Length: 232
Ligand SMILES: [Zn+2]
Image 1 (cartoon, rainbow, N blue to C red):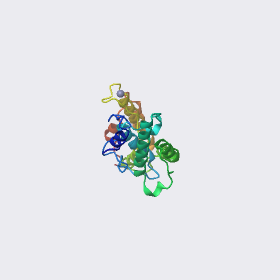
Image 2 (image 1 turned 60 degrees about the vertical axis):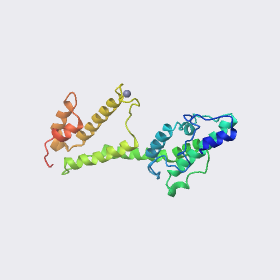
Image 3 (image 1 turned 180 degrees about the vertical axis):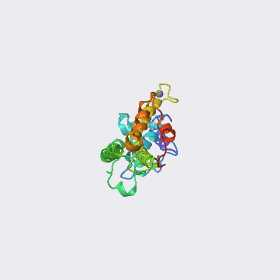
Image 4 (image 1 turned 90 degrees about the vertical axis):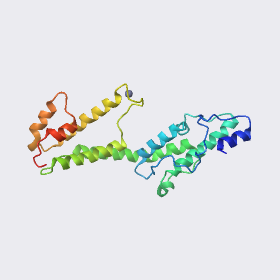
């Protein structure tokens, strides 16, 4: 019997619709893993995105952001507590044992969610800032190949995107065009970063030519076809 059925038959007067956020189906026990990501001290953003998606797909994220308020009805109040405890357990299951002691012992999913955010989001914020500074300073040094220089940029771009993904549209197929526009802007920004960091003595003229083109070429095109490989 599921928790829902047990509680419902105990009260015997009310049933919870299976689509309600208050319902827990068979496989949704406290031992379940709702994400495959384990929280360490340095991957909070990745974990919180994954858990948020997972909880939203179960219509239960409202217990964490407070939008599902504490019910006044006795029966629902009981179930509200059951769901909270279950979500707390799900979140705890995805926290690496090495840092579990740093998280307080609570049965309130909203408190736990806020605490994790307060404690760990800052670390990621500082990390993004550090990566952007490195990106800003990334140059093709004298004697460094374009391939190596591009590889250095790519490593930084990937690390930043993992922490700070570009905006995307939630409508399938994105009829409004926001997703495409966001990616185009990202590509233009990267093209500038790439061209401006090239060794000026070798690529100064080509760089100015590429930047004067309208429309601007894609980064991929410039990297593969736009530069003579002087030192590969
Ligand atoms: Zn759209």
